[in-house]
Length: 111
Image (cartoon, rainbow, N blue to C red; front, side, top):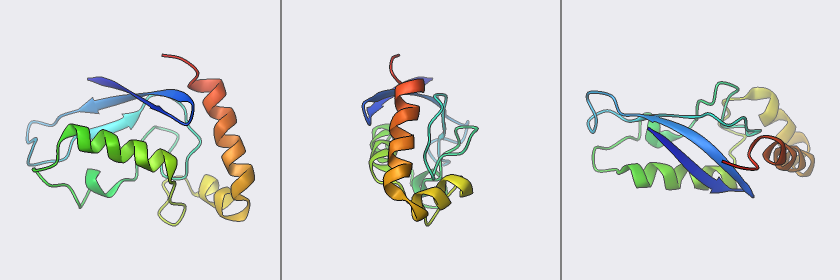
């Protein structure tokens, strides 16, 4: 299943896989669109608690997508999946945000 998330002026494609154990097990979600973000690695994997140890069968796919959208707006460089990007974010946040905007223009400008 593929979803589009609209944020930061871009359109980001996500791949969503529901394991056989769903909803007892969390869905697997990854970005297909390249993104510059401390909580998303180069393979598109996402560091988000509700996709890991904070998963609950009561959560809905809508909640997962809204949480990912919120993560795009509020990166957490203290819990990174991409160490280099997190270091950049911590040392010069304004420059890192500009890099993220540039990557959005380059890779997420359309569906």
